Image (cartoon, rainbow, N blue to C red; front, side, top):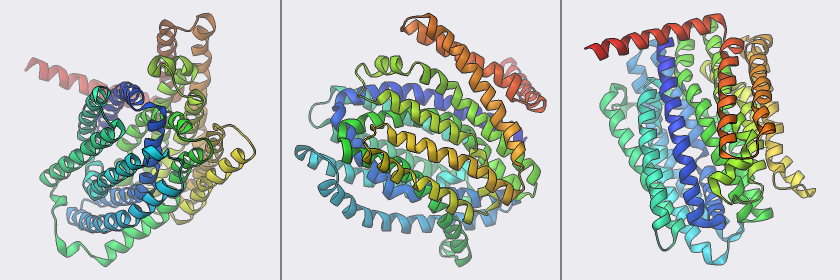
Length: 512
């Protein structure tokens, strides 16, 4: 049943990710055309400030989801409710503190630190203020959304994601018809969608989960507070390294090159985020079961699921990343018509970093499930933090803007390998098992898919038909080689078994 649930959740989130990816491609084109490269870059810079203010969201969300899923694995609903109430009180307090501190700091940076044209300063300030509203709603909703993940209601999360993307797609089209300050209008659209869906998910969670009932007696439970904050505090280092690597690079590029290069980097990050949705969808489907399995004391199955999550997550990313990398120049011209300089190389380098990260993403979930994260996060988080000084050094030596992505590739590769060594030390997971079960199969799939996909690129001139042929050839090669070279006999048998069950169920429903 748990394997069945994992595959159903993965399928639901994968469908959502593909749907969201298609809509996001069109939306980004409209938004870039409506705002222009300069305003698009400024919007990315303001977003980087919000990213720094809300980066604790990721930390606290992971901590909440981990404790929820661990208690669910033990079958104790009363304990789950206690964790939920403690988490809710922490997030309410934290959101007030972060917004109170972030508001004046963010406005100071916009005024005195960033490269912002004088005539766009008022608009940037209002975009920042509106974004703080969305940030507050997002922080408060984290315990509720974490419960969906912990309870493995991933398919419902996928539905909300699709609806949100449809609204964003609609607003992006309306933006092209709007008159006035389009950057300000775009901020209003984004905040409205974000707050609306946070409210809907809170109401929905309170309705379907008994564990989301509010009991003020648990709000300030010292034991729960200590455990959640202790887990989150060590997770903080890793998350800070990640946010410093991504959002810090945005600020660094703004200081050295201005908002137009920010636009190129912002587009590349959007491509990365949308492609990452495919791998993250699968990790999200596996994570609750990995944690619940550890809660039941089944370490062997937990490590097996973690390696499967890394392998399948990497393959799902390759499915889109390889055709994109090979045809990046043509895709960007087709998508954006006139992409900002450096966009193609930014996109390719960021996708390479993403693939390297996916190779060990499941191990992060496994370590979090066990809870031994102090030294793990301190070491690997410090490596990620080094991305920014390394990028600064490259730029100081006269390297081009894309060198910030090269710095990210270096640190991500170190972190990905570092996770495996920590897994051996903390969990007893053999390094050879990761190499033979994840790295070698993924490398074979990558090598074969790249060689096969390059053939039509060499033989045909740039055109839409070549893009289609490269994409179909690459995707088919990845699926076939993954099935026969990356998946074990047991994994193939499991997929066939569950697919058969789903088809039988659909057939019975059709007959009735």
